[in-house]
Length: 318
Image (cartoon, rainbow, N blue to C red; front, side, top):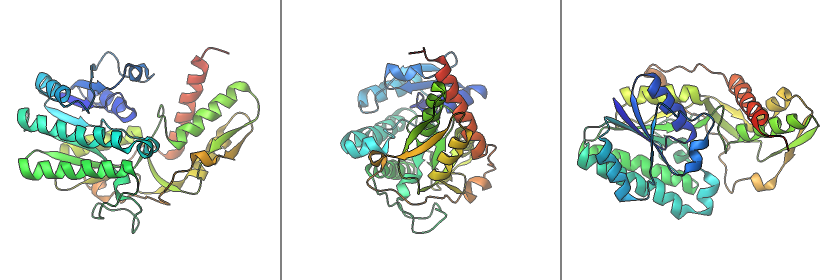
């Protein structure tokens, strides 16, 4: 099967592309800038890389027509909440218009190609009950969450109106070795940098009192594949651990693993305008499809810290 993975150069995309290649599929992956191809864990020889800006309709259509994929994983998105607050219009151009451009092109040229949308648990906003089940209304509280809710509803609309098989995987916290821009890896990277100095130090932290449902990327890609194969367009599926962990606990575990004395230093600049206190997912629907996780958060923490330790070792000494 030839698979098109939009946003394959991103964190989830890199792992998903490698997973698909390992299953014997041909993969065409898209990226937005040349710098994304410098990622240490990028699958280089086994994926054909294509430059694509989701905001350019003609380019999206040209790629779909040229590749005629048998299936699509739509991961490309502006995925940073902080950037979405700073420039919501650009986030919507990529996430919402880009999704429309892709679905329109598939409708016209490859209407039978199954599609998986990497939707988001951020679309639920502040949940009215826990755990967060798929039947809760979408009530996002930040621009990123709103853009992902739009993607989610567009996917259902195209399925209902045009018969396209577009399944929706609503991802909660996803982390693991090599990720950037999340609290766990930000902390781990700071720990590894301090270890390199061999001196005591501090790591900068934001709000430590929130609770987050967090899964290992290596489990998440298996969940995505299960939903791609077994999911139904009318039935979104949460991907999560089914339990939540405090950001404070994550930071304290990394301090405990550190090879040099480290303390936590709160930084008000790292606090968000709004922050859901907890977002534990109901994952019964995912488990009913045959999914079960293999990685504990403790293992994810250690593997992520070791990734950044190796990164520090590879950097030239100053």
